[in-house]
Image (tube, rainbow, N blue to C red; front, side, top):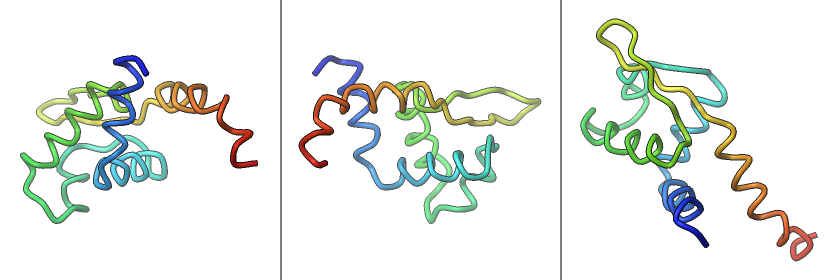
Length: 92
């Protein structure tokens, strides 16, 4: 597994990060403060999770005024699907 795939799977290994992705998928782009309200953790901790997701290419960040808004990047999820495709016959 290459560095890219390793970063993707490492980012997805954490429950909180998977939940962030689910929220962004279901509800669309959101500012950090709105995401932070959903989790029982301090904003710096959530920001660390968002950094890992951003560095893995699973989310993108855009500044709007003073706020940082995060969006899901589905292309990275497609990379995971493509990596797993050869193994699909094992569970079918």
